[in-house]
Length: 612
Image (cartoon, rainbow, N blue to C red; front, side, top):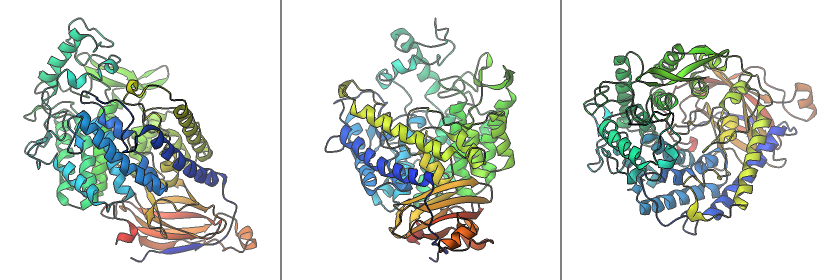
């Protein structure tokens, strides 16, 4: 394959952000290995208890290491890649012994938790798509939802519905037991009641740890919630898209389109608002007394709007990736717009309802900007930018908050301000935050002297020092992956052309300064003063885009560049018309590349530049 080549030789002192980025890569490589040594046995299993009941937990085991292959794909060490695969296999063995995993896939759980654990699997495709057992898993796991596994009839192809909110390698779960929920009852004490007809439970919270109340909840769940489809199951489209990116088989692509279209039809039938429950015969409200709200992970319980919008956005993003048709994004757009229309002004801010029940809309609060930012990052259309700005409502978004949450962090709002040219200090601040957070976690690990038998199942994911959000944003020019099961959508991706591996070569830093609909501005810096580096830049995380033209120049001005013996910066873009280009950076060379971009011009896949 002929890849356009751009040599850059002008030496220059590396920018501060470039030095800090390389330092973060080096120290995070060491921190990840330290984390694994501290918390796993020789066979890779987690140092923990001998038994773990219920259906919950395997997702948390996988989540403890889920971003290791992503970090490697960005430029992390080969050791991290090796550890990521070793730990996947170890967690699978351990939670199979506990009873949560069957045939390498969660036996039965909902798709918020399937989505979290399967991020690990999707990142393997970015790390190395040639591993045969990964290809086998992609096909087997997709088959669980294509009516191809007689032991797991999760999908009804005639009605285009997933048969239960709880599904997996043992098929749909139509009836829950008390043991299924035994590890989660104390957590759910902090949530509102799942039903409005529980006797003597007025809210605002519901005591699942009260055996009487729990018995009432379980009976109603099995009667109303456990048969039929819910919007959360749209997250399964990522599993199918992953299979398509791995194999290119049309049936996986078509499944994604058929399934999202089924939910779009149900939404149109419901007057434009997505219903949160569909019965086994495909009827809205079939087991809910005709109510379009009240389902599992629905409008009432446990989280409301955000966990309805998220799977819709994930599915629409996957459909866009597999077809190149931005019309699929109208599904999440209309849901954002309809909820915005239901809003009202309180204390000078526009707040929107996040829940719906027998009393109508309630739980008014500001809309989370992150889904709208993800939507805009896919298209860079003015209308999608306006959706972000109406949520922003004039806020500056020019600080990096020291926030912490399960898994990765969420600094989508200040990143958006940065690539819009409004927050130039963001690279320095997000790298500083990430380094501080890594140090905080390492310090917590060093002082973690408790009894492993008493640890919560989330213990390790709260301590994993590999934090990739900043590296995704800065090097790829995209918000981080939607944590509950999205794929990585980004305008660019980098490969080490000489080492033939994913990610930035050792010593090279990258910063996407600006992202527009038809243009991306990328700075590459070789911090190595002795050796040339070769970087292959790919248009799109899955090669789905195309570079139309490229204008590359040293980041120095023309006079300073000539004084250092470098090139005179180019003034006119050169035609590229390819999905890859190679930039050769001489020792300490720095370049700013302005790259024309034609979005969704190619069939996406995990194929690497040298695979042909």
